[in-house]
Length: 488
Ligand SMILES: *[C@@H]1O[C@H](CO)[C@@H](O)[C@H](O)[C@H]1NC(C)=O
Ligand SMILES: *[C@@H]1O[C@H](CO)[C@@H](O)[C@H](O)[C@H]1NC(C)=O
Ligand SMILES: *[C@@H]1O[C@H](CO)[C@@H](O)[C@H](O)[C@H]1NC(C)=O
Image 1 (cartoon, rainbow, N blue to C red):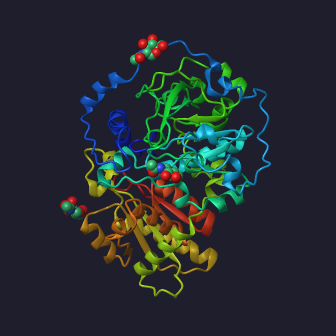
Image 2 (image 1 turned 180 degrees about the horizontal axis):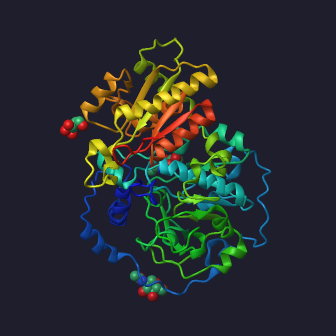
Image 3 (image 1 turned 90 degrees about the vertical axis):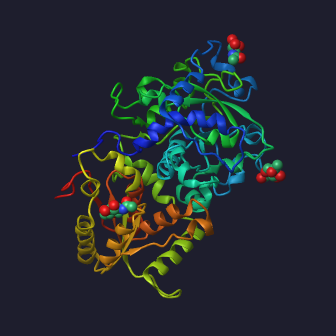
């Protein structure tokens, strides 16, 4: 039985909090990178603050008000960006080092595409894969935003909300080389520190067309961090793969790509929401932008799980970890398995057990012990993976490393009683920062000779794909929600 079959990847808590987020955005606008605030948002007070959001949209916008038209830069005969540039050198897709306004650094012969994250780290990783793939099919250079803690994560992040640059996690030179395309980060384009200019920009609002409970563009901390003041144009209803079906939110790559070209863009302009400084702008044609690209697929929802997924095949599988992160994770694996520094790491099975906030998906009459898959249920999957490894590749992977957000000591005692290993993160945040427990766990998962994950977790979903693509390893996903959910 599926607890919430139709919205299975983004956590419901996140959706609840999303309405609070815009309140938080206002509070945070004047703050710097250390966001020393905890946003406690009672449902009602947030809802009442929604009233602040502009509801009457001035009808004074013309398509041609975009900055490019005003400055005569944009040539409406769309021709593919000509890369006389070296795709491996990010500086060759911009004019030079980052500038205080991103406009000053964009090449007039190059078109760009960008988007913001707001769904938790793994979901933002998927959003970035989608962004880069969308760049490929629209002949635009993707400009990837920094990772920022999602609103839901802020509670656990204390005072450290440092942004995490994409290029600190993923090996960008390797990615560019593999896909033979330039990929930029926002830090290549704009200096986003206190001296930077607030840039006004028109973007497409996809979020409001794909779901029906939140009548606003998707809120994200990224524009605040990047000092962008956005005027949003709602995308047409048909970007949604299943219009009027509230239990699915996916839109298609090619529907959004159609809006990236002049004819599709101009035919679908509607009055935009003005920026905070009350300027209305149509979707920018030089730096094309969409509010949220997590729910994007070529053919079906949650497509990244599918073997044919173009975003995974063309982009995701080439997003390898940085060498530094890889080394760090190897140190953790050695310590976990008690392997000495110079000795090789034996093949192991990695497990990801997602608990904590997933409990809100458990039905009230199902006790937590029955809702979550028990360790013996997970063990059954581990055995399947071990058997398959032995049979197909002759690999004996007897070591098992468990990664989990579970804090309960009883759980970890039981893990150790199974003869499995847990990763000691007691000093990880202190030594490397708030992001590193999840980063290191993700790298460890991806290095398993085989992997066992948790159903409906995007963390597990990505690790599935990585172990398949990078280790050619068997994977299994444990179902949960009721006793016997994973029986098979
Ligand atoms: C902003 O960043 C740029 C480049 O990263 C740097 O040169 C400049 O000094 C910074 N300004 C402030 C106020 O930190
Ligand atoms: C925003 O601009 C519109 C059109 O110029 C004007 O009618 C409206 O009063 C402005 N709103 C605010 C809050 O300044
Ligand atoms: C830890 O888990 C055990 C077994 O599931 C449970 O009995 C106990 O109440 C939990 N402890 C806490 C502090 O949640």
